[in-house]
Amino acid sequence: MNRRTFRDIHGILLLDKPLGLSSNQALQTARRLVGAAKGGHTGSLDPLATGLLPLCFGEATKIAGWLLGSRKAYEAEVKLGETTTTADLEGEVVETRAVPPLDDATLEAALAPLRGRIVQIPPAYSAIKQDGVPLYVKARRGEAVDVPAREVDVYRLDVIERSGDTLRLHVECGSGTYVRSLAVDLGQNLGCGAHLTGLRRLWVEPFMAPAMVTLDQLREAAEAGPDPLDACLLPVEAGLAHIPRVDLNPDQTRVLGFGQPVPLRPGAAPGQEGASEAAAPVAASSEAAALEAAALEAAAPVGAGYAGDPAAAGRLAATAGFQGRCAAYGSDGRLMALAEVDEGGVLRVLRGFNLP
Image (cartoon, rainbow, N blue to C red; front, side, top):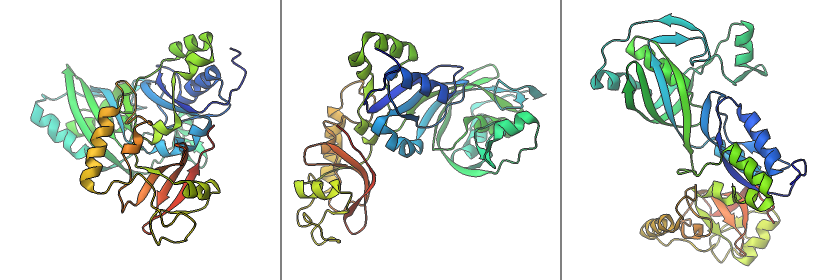
């Protein structure tokens, strides 16, 4: 196919980002191969990091920001005893210290304060902008960089292997967490310093068991034609598979099609047509919801690459008193919007989709 020809394509590519490319370089390479006019990624990976980089094309770019805040998992390699200017192996070693004798109790005592909701200082060499300029640009100029601390969530931080003075860690964290900073803080807690020597992103919610595609595989698909390329993409709804689904009746579908709020429960304001008929299907109880969730998990195909199959996602519906974000589907089964249901039972559009 002509790689310069843009196609009307909408979907999510679970890219296995290679070593050495920035996230934007990887995105632009993949976008040209896919032939998508519009694309975005869901959270940067440093050039020295590899692994899952979900790329959104077409209408899927509307949920890229939503996925940016998703929980993520990494495998990190940390070298103890050396501190560098960049907190990773790209920087110069500025301090070397002896690594103390380490047993399981000592490591756990150093790791424990780094779990949960913690206050973290991001690296000076980072893409965080200050006065419109990335911090790494200022740092490379030799300018003084004052990086404000911020709260982040670390759900899991465990040693999975140790070889000499190198630790391999499993990390699960929230958006905005710098694994480089975790390495630095771990080194400080152990009293010997440390820096990150390797990082691979394992998953990004809802893509918990991702079947990743490499750029080489994408190039091969591009040579074979549009159909093999399209087979590399997940549907837009895959990015919303981890939130409840609300199926609308025909009247509600028509109202939502105009971008108007949709009452889901009897008597809910503002009283558009369809207010008397609740959106379906709706789980009748928490027990039913649990059974439906289990059915959904069982129905998900092996290697689907995300937390649910859109064809089966109707089984994971909002409960009768549901409040919060959801994926709204029309009466024809088509994804219409990322939406939010308020405490009064009214569904409002956050991002609408115009899918073929």
